[in-house]
Length: 622
Image (cartoon, rainbow, N blue to C red; front, side, top):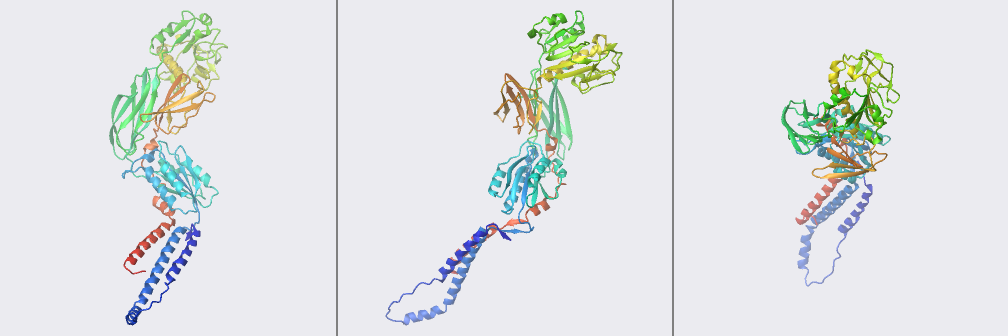
């Protein structure tokens, strides 16, 4: 046993005045009386009870000394160390990820249970021990450095809250072990619901023992693990993909509601087997765009994963300029007229290369410019450009030798331009393949790229190295689809300033420079909107306040952009705890080997005070 405040033993000196008070006797006075007979009989009777009175006084004095001694022991804060370790440096890694918001059967959240366990560890440690607290999510943070201030540690534990973030116990483990290295008797305590199996993956450090405390029992949860929207300009639709996972141990029946700008568009009943996922694809026509929200109508242990958001950008009719020799425009004209929902037929024009050179710079502005057969003298240095069967120094591609009857070797099926386009068996008399465009090669022959793309800071270009009119009949039928895809790719690359979806905890940063000097980030709360004003540095900013879910609006200059933040994490939705990582009871027992007993001594002192008062009332003590 040791004492945290040995100086308190100085208060034992209070026993001296207690003893002196009991030894002090009242000085007797001499009084004359007329007769001694009565007083002699009284003195004789008193002799028989004086020894009992002395015992009562001694017992009373000893009881008072005992009370004082117990109070002094409590002030000295005695502690018992059964483990033989005198001082420890302890890091508590507290999982505050989304799964810790799960509500258990007793009505408490997992985080509340974990916080209570952490508070017990802090309160039961020796005052000589140093304790730090580290949060274990994707926002790994040391909320309290090593300190012996228990009151401050308890205050911090009361302040921290779980957030809709993914778990990242390995990062918290690396941070905590790095801070513990070189400390006296380091020890790491991880309090989590299993961290989606991450506890098993923690790399053990020999000099730093780890104790895992696993909280949580329920696995009753159905959550949204994926939600995206993609505008299919080629088909004129918007495709919404939703993935819902049932992490429960029994089948679930529920309904899923899809809203656009707050208005319900679809309600879909779902039946999902235990431990299975359901994927749903929904096609809508949203030419004006909008904010999508999907929600699950079900009561389960985890509410935060029952909603998700996505953004659909508005569809814009593109104004084209087709530059080709006179009489060669029929095929391109027919292709554009077949997609009037994509092409602004009124604002578009078809002109010859000579007429294009005569246009003023502002008159050449267009959403996309198509050059066929021959290049003009003035090829734009910026914008969206399509080159069909042209060559020359002004072309932003380097072409090789003419290839007769080219054979298709491969094509990139994943690129948006090749969506729903088959290049197998294409027959053309000849081509001029593009060279040195391996990264942008969309269709390849022996000689190079038959179709290639190139993205520059201010220019996006697509090259077709063959005469479309001379291609075989099946390709001529499919060419409008290819042209749709190219225009859709231009539109996506031009309007894609931010990622369509960010994970909670991620940093929002623009993909290209923004106008102006300041960006205003607006994200909704429940019925309110919060704003964050950020200074732009070279047209960029970094916004890290994504500890929420929902749509985000960003204003910069005269432009506005939309994106959204979602949890959508199957590991957080799978809330069933992983217990193979540690034995919670053994870990907790090893943590309680070092305990203080000042509260017990204080309780004993209080009991003795009441006991002494009762004995005095019964005249057992003086």
